[in-house]
Image (cartoon, rainbow, N blue to C red; front, top):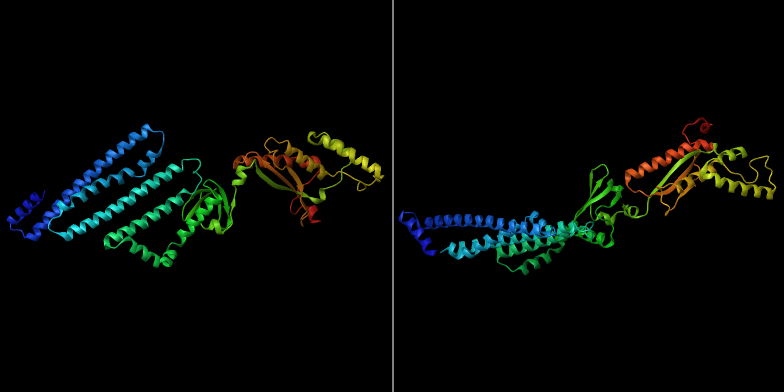
Length: 414
Protein backbone atom coordinates (compact mmCIF):
# COMPACT_ATOMS: atom_id res chain seq x y z
CA UNK A 1 0.00 0.00 0.00
CA UNK A 2 2.90 2.36 0.77
CA UNK A 3 4.24 1.82 -2.79
CA UNK A 4 0.89 2.77 -4.27
CA UNK A 5 0.70 5.81 -2.03
CA UNK A 6 4.19 6.95 -3.06
CA UNK A 7 3.32 6.27 -6.70
CA UNK A 8 0.35 8.63 -6.40
CA UNK A 9 2.50 11.33 -4.80
CA UNK A 10 5.15 10.92 -7.53
CA UNK A 11 2.41 11.18 -10.14
CA UNK A 12 1.29 14.48 -8.59
CA UNK A 13 4.87 15.73 -8.49
CA UNK A 14 5.27 14.99 -12.21
CA UNK A 15 2.33 17.34 -12.78
CA UNK A 16 4.50 20.11 -11.33
CA UNK A 17 2.50 20.21 -8.08
CA UNK A 18 4.34 21.26 -4.93
CA UNK A 19 5.55 18.34 -2.75
CA UNK A 20 3.72 19.60 0.36
CA UNK A 21 0.51 20.15 -1.58
CA UNK A 22 0.91 16.71 -3.20
CA UNK A 23 1.11 15.14 0.25
CA UNK A 24 -2.11 16.89 1.38
CA UNK A 25 -3.95 15.94 -1.80
CA UNK A 26 -2.87 12.35 -1.29
CA UNK A 27 -3.93 12.48 2.38
CA UNK A 28 -7.36 13.98 1.60
CA UNK A 29 -8.11 11.57 -1.23
CA UNK A 30 -6.97 8.55 0.78
CA UNK A 31 -8.87 9.72 3.86
CA UNK A 32 -12.04 10.26 1.82
CA UNK A 33 -11.79 6.78 0.33
CA UNK A 34 -11.16 5.19 3.73
CA UNK A 35 -14.03 7.11 5.36
CA UNK A 36 -16.35 6.09 2.52
CA UNK A 37 -15.23 2.48 2.90
CA UNK A 38 -15.69 2.59 6.69
CA UNK A 39 -19.21 4.08 6.22
CA UNK A 40 -20.13 1.25 3.88
CA UNK A 41 -18.63 -1.20 6.37
CA UNK A 42 -20.73 0.36 9.15
CA UNK A 43 -23.93 0.08 7.09
CA UNK A 44 -23.15 -3.53 6.18
CA UNK A 45 -22.30 -4.55 9.76
CA UNK A 46 -25.40 -2.76 11.08
CA UNK A 47 -27.60 -4.66 8.63
CA UNK A 48 -26.00 -7.99 9.53
CA UNK A 49 -26.25 -7.43 13.30
CA UNK A 50 -29.83 -6.17 13.00
CA UNK A 51 -30.89 -9.19 10.94
CA UNK A 52 -29.25 -11.55 13.45
CA UNK A 53 -31.13 -9.89 16.33
CA UNK A 54 -34.40 -10.00 14.39
CA UNK A 55 -33.99 -13.74 13.80
CA UNK A 56 -33.15 -14.27 17.47
CA UNK A 57 -36.18 -12.26 18.58
CA UNK A 58 -38.46 -14.47 16.48
CA UNK A 59 -37.01 -17.65 17.97
CA UNK A 60 -36.90 -16.59 21.65
CA UNK A 61 -39.77 -15.92 24.03
CA UNK A 62 -38.01 -13.12 25.88
CA UNK A 63 -38.46 -9.51 24.73
CA UNK A 64 -34.90 -8.53 25.68
CA UNK A 65 -33.68 -8.79 22.09
CA UNK A 66 -36.65 -6.67 20.92
CA UNK A 67 -35.61 -3.91 23.30
CA UNK A 68 -32.01 -4.19 22.05
CA UNK A 69 -33.31 -3.44 18.57
CA UNK A 70 -35.43 -0.48 19.65
CA UNK A 71 -32.60 1.04 21.73
CA UNK A 72 -30.32 1.42 18.69
CA UNK A 73 -27.85 -1.25 19.84
CA UNK A 74 -27.18 -2.59 16.28
CA UNK A 75 -26.36 0.94 15.07
CA UNK A 76 -23.92 1.67 17.89
CA UNK A 77 -22.21 -1.73 17.98
CA UNK A 78 -21.77 -1.63 14.19
CA UNK A 79 -19.61 1.47 14.57
CA UNK A 80 -16.96 -0.55 16.40
CA UNK A 81 -16.03 -2.42 13.21
CA UNK A 82 -15.14 0.66 11.09
CA UNK A 83 -13.38 2.13 14.15
CA UNK A 84 -11.13 -0.94 14.43
CA UNK A 85 -10.71 -0.91 10.63
CA UNK A 86 -9.49 2.71 10.56
CA UNK A 87 -7.35 2.22 13.66
CA UNK A 88 -5.52 -0.71 12.03
CA UNK A 89 -4.87 1.29 8.83
CA UNK A 90 -3.40 4.42 10.44
CA UNK A 91 0.26 3.32 9.96
CA UNK A 92 -0.39 2.78 6.22
CA UNK A 93 -2.85 5.64 5.87
CA UNK A 94 -0.60 8.44 7.10
CA UNK A 95 3.03 8.37 6.02
CA UNK A 96 5.93 10.74 6.66
CA UNK A 97 3.93 12.87 9.13
CA UNK A 98 4.17 11.81 12.80
CA UNK A 99 2.17 14.88 13.89
CA UNK A 100 -0.78 14.09 11.64
CA UNK A 101 -0.52 10.44 12.61
CA UNK A 102 -0.69 11.37 16.30
CA UNK A 103 -3.63 13.74 15.80
CA UNK A 104 -5.64 11.20 13.81
CA UNK A 105 -4.97 8.57 16.50
CA UNK A 106 -6.22 11.01 19.13
CA UNK A 107 -9.42 11.65 17.18
CA UNK A 108 -10.00 7.95 16.62
CA UNK A 109 -9.47 7.17 20.31
CA UNK A 110 -11.90 9.92 21.31
CA UNK A 111 -14.40 8.52 18.82
CA UNK A 112 -13.87 5.06 20.34
CA UNK A 113 -14.71 6.40 23.81
CA UNK A 114 -17.87 8.08 22.48
CA UNK A 115 -18.94 4.87 20.71
CA UNK A 116 -18.41 2.96 23.96
CA UNK A 117 -20.64 5.45 25.80
CA UNK A 118 -23.36 5.02 23.15
CA UNK A 119 -23.16 1.23 23.47
CA UNK A 120 -23.45 1.35 27.27
CA UNK A 121 -26.34 3.81 26.92
CA UNK A 122 -28.26 1.50 24.59
CA UNK A 123 -27.65 -1.47 26.94
CA UNK A 124 -28.95 0.53 29.92
CA UNK A 125 -32.03 1.60 27.96
CA UNK A 126 -32.61 -2.03 27.00
CA UNK A 127 -32.37 -3.16 30.64
CA UNK A 128 -34.71 -0.33 31.70
CA UNK A 129 -37.36 -1.26 29.15
CA UNK A 130 -37.06 -4.96 29.96
CA UNK A 131 -37.19 -4.53 33.77
CA UNK A 132 -40.30 -2.36 33.50
CA UNK A 133 -42.11 -5.32 31.93
CA UNK A 134 -41.47 -7.46 35.03
CA UNK A 135 -44.09 -7.30 37.77
CA UNK A 136 -41.47 -7.03 40.51
CA UNK A 137 -39.87 -3.95 38.89
CA UNK A 138 -42.84 -2.32 37.16
CA UNK A 139 -43.54 0.09 40.00
CA UNK A 140 -39.89 0.76 40.99
CA UNK A 141 -37.95 3.98 40.13
CA UNK A 142 -35.81 2.26 37.47
CA UNK A 143 -35.32 5.56 35.59
CA UNK A 144 -33.47 7.03 38.58
CA UNK A 145 -30.92 4.21 38.66
CA UNK A 146 -30.45 4.26 34.89
CA UNK A 147 -29.81 8.01 34.98
CA UNK A 148 -27.26 7.59 37.78
CA UNK A 149 -25.37 4.94 35.80
CA UNK A 150 -25.53 7.10 32.67
CA UNK A 151 -24.18 10.07 34.60
CA UNK A 152 -21.28 7.96 35.91
CA UNK A 153 -20.54 6.61 32.42
CA UNK A 154 -20.47 10.13 30.96
CA UNK A 155 -18.21 11.39 33.76
CA UNK A 156 -15.80 8.49 33.23
CA UNK A 157 -15.97 8.98 29.45
CA UNK A 158 -15.24 12.72 29.68
CA UNK A 159 -12.29 12.08 32.03
CA UNK A 160 -10.88 9.49 29.61
CA UNK A 161 -11.33 11.89 26.66
CA UNK A 162 -9.48 14.66 28.51
CA UNK A 163 -6.77 12.15 29.37
CA UNK A 164 -6.41 11.19 25.68
CA UNK A 165 -6.35 14.80 24.47
CA UNK A 166 -3.90 16.06 27.10
CA UNK A 167 -1.75 12.96 27.41
CA UNK A 168 -2.12 12.99 31.21
CA UNK A 169 -3.04 10.06 33.40
CA UNK A 170 -6.66 9.52 34.47
CA UNK A 171 -5.55 9.78 38.09
CA UNK A 172 -4.52 13.40 37.48
CA UNK A 173 -8.11 14.36 36.63
CA UNK A 174 -9.51 12.36 39.54
CA UNK A 175 -7.22 14.31 41.85
CA UNK A 176 -8.39 17.56 40.29
CA UNK A 177 -12.00 16.52 40.77
CA UNK A 178 -11.26 15.86 44.44
CA UNK A 179 -9.89 19.37 44.79
CA UNK A 180 -13.02 20.74 43.11
CA UNK A 181 -15.39 18.54 45.11
CA UNK A 182 -17.13 21.53 46.75
CA UNK A 183 -17.83 23.08 43.33
CA UNK A 184 -18.98 19.72 41.95
CA UNK A 185 -21.31 19.20 44.91
CA UNK A 186 -22.84 22.61 44.23
CA UNK A 187 -23.24 21.90 40.51
CA UNK A 188 -24.72 18.44 41.04
CA UNK A 189 -26.69 19.32 44.18
CA UNK A 190 -30.11 18.51 42.67
CA UNK A 191 -28.79 15.32 41.10
CA UNK A 192 -27.29 14.10 44.38
CA UNK A 193 -30.44 14.99 46.34
CA UNK A 194 -32.56 13.24 43.72
CA UNK A 195 -30.38 10.14 43.87
CA UNK A 196 -30.56 10.01 47.68
CA UNK A 197 -34.33 10.55 47.53
CA UNK A 198 -34.75 7.78 44.95
CA UNK A 199 -32.90 5.33 47.20
CA UNK A 200 -35.01 6.34 50.22
CA UNK A 201 -38.23 6.11 48.22
CA UNK A 202 -37.34 2.63 46.97
CA UNK A 203 -35.97 1.39 50.32
CA UNK A 204 -38.95 2.63 52.34
CA UNK A 205 -41.49 1.85 49.60
CA UNK A 206 -42.94 5.37 49.87
CA UNK A 207 -44.13 5.77 46.28
CA UNK A 208 -44.49 3.41 43.37
CA UNK A 209 -45.31 4.05 39.75
CA UNK A 210 -49.09 3.79 39.48
CA UNK A 211 -49.78 5.03 43.03
CA UNK A 212 -52.49 7.66 43.52
CA UNK A 213 -50.88 10.49 45.50
CA UNK A 214 -52.10 13.88 46.67
CA UNK A 215 -49.71 16.77 47.31
CA UNK A 216 -51.74 19.91 47.90
CA UNK A 217 -48.69 22.18 48.05
CA UNK A 218 -48.03 21.52 44.35
CA UNK A 219 -51.65 21.03 43.28
CA UNK A 220 -50.95 17.37 42.52
CA UNK A 221 -53.76 14.82 42.77
CA UNK A 222 -53.43 11.81 40.51
CA UNK A 223 -51.35 8.81 39.48
CA UNK A 224 -47.54 8.64 39.51
CA UNK A 225 -46.43 7.91 35.94
CA UNK A 226 -42.67 8.39 36.21
CA UNK A 227 -39.99 8.57 38.90
CA UNK A 228 -36.54 9.62 37.74
CA UNK A 229 -33.42 11.17 39.20
CA UNK A 230 -34.65 14.75 39.27
CA UNK A 231 -38.45 14.71 39.07
CA UNK A 232 -41.60 12.75 39.79
CA UNK A 233 -44.37 13.11 37.22
CA UNK A 234 -47.98 12.91 38.40
CA UNK A 235 -50.87 12.76 35.96
CA UNK A 236 -53.77 14.53 37.62
CA UNK A 237 -57.34 13.40 37.10
CA UNK A 238 -57.93 16.29 34.69
CA UNK A 239 -55.08 14.76 32.60
CA UNK A 240 -52.65 17.60 33.37
CA UNK A 241 -49.11 16.69 34.44
CA UNK A 242 -47.58 17.98 37.66
CA UNK A 243 -43.80 17.72 37.98
CA UNK A 244 -42.38 17.59 41.50
CA UNK A 245 -38.67 17.46 42.45
CA UNK A 246 -37.91 13.94 43.67
CA UNK A 247 -36.32 15.16 46.88
CA UNK A 248 -39.52 16.99 47.86
CA UNK A 249 -41.25 13.64 48.36
CA UNK A 250 -38.83 13.14 51.25
CA UNK A 251 -38.75 16.69 52.63
CA UNK A 252 -42.49 17.51 52.27
CA UNK A 253 -45.61 15.62 53.29
CA UNK A 254 -47.94 13.94 50.80
CA UNK A 255 -50.82 11.49 50.86
CA UNK A 256 -50.46 8.09 49.20
CA UNK A 257 -53.78 6.31 48.55
CA UNK A 258 -52.13 2.91 48.01
CA UNK A 259 -53.32 1.71 51.41
CA UNK A 260 -56.89 2.31 50.35
CA UNK A 261 -56.34 0.51 47.04
CA UNK A 262 -54.86 -2.52 48.82
CA UNK A 263 -57.49 -2.62 51.58
CA UNK A 264 -60.81 -4.47 51.54
CA UNK A 265 -62.75 -1.33 50.65
CA UNK A 266 -62.78 2.40 49.92
CA UNK A 267 -64.06 4.60 52.69
CA UNK A 268 -67.39 6.43 52.52
CA UNK A 269 -67.54 9.31 55.00
CA UNK A 270 -70.32 11.77 54.28
CA UNK A 271 -73.06 13.44 56.29
CA UNK A 272 -76.72 14.30 56.01
CA UNK A 273 -77.53 17.59 57.74
CA UNK A 274 -80.65 17.18 59.89
CA UNK A 275 -82.72 20.17 61.01
CA UNK A 276 -82.44 20.04 64.81
CA UNK A 277 -86.00 21.39 65.47
CA UNK A 278 -87.42 18.41 63.53
CA UNK A 279 -86.04 15.90 66.09
CA UNK A 280 -88.79 14.72 68.49
CA UNK A 281 -90.09 11.78 70.54
CA UNK A 282 -92.24 9.19 68.80
CA UNK A 283 -95.80 8.32 69.83
CA UNK A 284 -97.10 4.74 70.15
CA UNK A 285 -99.14 4.91 66.95
CA UNK A 286 -96.10 6.19 65.05
CA UNK A 287 -94.00 3.30 66.33
CA UNK A 288 -96.66 0.83 65.17
CA UNK A 289 -96.55 2.37 61.72
CA UNK A 290 -92.74 2.25 61.61
CA UNK A 291 -92.80 -1.50 62.44
CA UNK A 292 -93.97 -2.04 58.87
CA UNK A 293 -90.47 -1.06 57.69
CA UNK A 294 -88.73 -4.40 57.36
CA UNK A 295 -85.18 -3.27 58.17
CA UNK A 296 -86.15 -1.99 61.65
CA UNK A 297 -89.22 -4.06 62.59
CA UNK A 298 -87.21 -6.47 64.77
CA UNK A 299 -85.21 -3.61 66.29
CA UNK A 300 -88.39 -1.69 67.19
CA UNK A 301 -90.04 -4.72 68.77
CA UNK A 302 -87.02 -5.49 70.94
CA UNK A 303 -86.32 -1.86 71.77
CA UNK A 304 -89.89 -0.88 72.70
CA UNK A 305 -90.23 -3.99 74.90
CA UNK A 306 -87.03 -3.08 76.73
CA UNK A 307 -88.09 0.57 77.15
CA UNK A 308 -91.57 -0.35 78.40
CA UNK A 309 -90.09 -2.67 81.03
CA UNK A 310 -87.70 0.05 82.24
CA UNK A 311 -90.49 2.67 82.38
CA UNK A 312 -92.75 0.33 84.35
CA UNK A 313 -89.95 -0.51 86.78
CA UNK A 314 -89.19 3.17 87.31
CA UNK A 315 -92.94 4.05 87.42
CA UNK A 316 -92.38 6.91 84.97
CA UNK A 317 -95.26 9.31 84.30
CA UNK A 318 -95.86 8.79 80.60
CA UNK A 319 -98.47 11.54 80.36
CA UNK A 320 -95.46 13.56 79.21
CA UNK A 321 -93.26 11.99 76.55
CA UNK A 322 -90.14 13.47 78.08
CA UNK A 323 -90.50 11.30 81.19
CA UNK A 324 -88.70 7.96 81.29
CA UNK A 325 -87.08 6.43 78.23
CA UNK A 326 -88.35 7.11 74.72
CA UNK A 327 -87.44 6.59 71.10
CA UNK A 328 -86.87 9.59 68.84
CA UNK A 329 -87.50 9.82 65.13
CA UNK A 330 -83.83 10.59 64.50
CA UNK A 331 -82.67 7.67 66.66
CA UNK A 332 -84.91 5.22 64.78
CA UNK A 333 -83.83 6.73 61.46
CA UNK A 334 -80.16 6.38 62.48
CA UNK A 335 -80.73 2.68 63.23
CA UNK A 336 -82.49 2.30 59.88
CA UNK A 337 -79.48 3.84 58.10
CA UNK A 338 -77.05 1.49 59.87
CA UNK A 339 -79.16 -1.60 59.09
CA UNK A 340 -79.49 -0.46 55.49
CA UNK A 341 -75.69 -0.16 55.16
CA UNK A 342 -75.03 -3.53 56.82
CA UNK A 343 -77.33 -5.33 54.41
CA UNK A 344 -76.13 -3.49 51.30
CA UNK A 345 -74.35 -5.95 48.95
CA UNK A 346 -71.74 -3.37 47.88
CA UNK A 347 -70.71 -2.31 51.39
CA UNK A 348 -67.82 -4.28 52.91
CA UNK A 349 -68.79 -6.35 55.96
CA UNK A 350 -65.10 -6.81 56.86
CA UNK A 351 -64.61 -3.15 57.79
CA UNK A 352 -66.38 -0.63 60.00
CA UNK A 353 -70.04 0.14 59.22
CA UNK A 354 -71.50 2.94 61.30
CA UNK A 355 -73.98 5.78 61.28
CA UNK A 356 -73.05 8.32 63.92
CA UNK A 357 -74.48 11.61 65.12
CA UNK A 358 -72.09 14.56 65.23
CA UNK A 359 -72.47 17.65 67.49
CA UNK A 360 -75.05 20.21 66.26
CA UNK A 361 -73.52 23.26 64.65
CA UNK A 362 -74.27 26.94 65.20
CA UNK A 363 -76.83 27.02 62.39
CA UNK A 364 -79.19 24.49 63.99
CA UNK A 365 -78.09 21.51 61.92
CA UNK A 366 -77.27 18.09 63.35
CA UNK A 367 -74.93 16.13 61.04
CA UNK A 368 -75.69 12.43 60.68
CA UNK A 369 -72.49 10.87 59.35
CA UNK A 370 -72.32 7.66 57.32
CA UNK A 371 -69.05 5.81 57.85
CA UNK A 372 -68.57 2.64 55.78
CA UNK A 373 -66.43 1.09 53.06
CA UNK A 374 -67.32 0.34 49.46
CA UNK A 375 -66.30 -3.04 48.02
CA UNK A 376 -65.68 -1.40 44.66
CA UNK A 377 -62.73 1.02 44.81
CA UNK A 378 -62.89 2.17 41.19
CA UNK A 379 -63.68 5.89 41.19
CA UNK A 380 -66.72 5.99 38.91
CA UNK A 381 -68.38 2.94 40.51
CA UNK A 382 -67.55 4.33 43.97
CA UNK A 383 -69.23 7.68 43.24
CA UNK A 384 -72.27 5.95 41.73
CA UNK A 385 -72.63 3.80 44.85
CA UNK A 386 -72.50 6.86 47.13
CA UNK A 387 -75.12 8.61 45.00
CA UNK A 388 -77.43 5.56 45.13
CA UNK A 389 -77.04 5.23 48.91
CA UNK A 390 -77.75 8.88 49.65
CA UNK A 391 -80.62 9.01 47.16
CA UNK A 392 -82.27 6.26 49.19
CA UNK A 393 -81.44 7.71 52.61
CA UNK A 394 -82.63 11.21 51.69
CA UNK A 395 -85.83 9.74 50.26
CA UNK A 396 -86.39 7.78 53.50
CA UNK A 397 -86.35 10.92 55.70
CA UNK A 398 -90.09 11.61 55.26
CA UNK A 399 -91.04 8.17 56.64
CA UNK A 400 -89.50 9.17 59.95
CA UNK A 401 -90.75 12.76 59.82
CA UNK A 402 -87.13 13.95 59.93
CA UNK A 403 -86.33 17.16 58.03
CA UNK A 404 -83.07 17.86 56.27
CA UNK A 405 -81.35 21.13 57.10
CA UNK A 406 -81.85 24.02 54.70
CA UNK A 407 -80.04 27.32 55.11
CA UNK A 408 -82.49 30.18 55.61
CA UNK A 409 -85.57 28.05 56.31
CA UNK A 410 -88.26 29.92 58.29
CA UNK A 411 -87.96 27.53 61.24
CA UNK A 412 -84.24 28.13 61.50
CA UNK A 413 -84.58 31.91 61.17
CA UNK A 414 -87.08 32.03 64.01
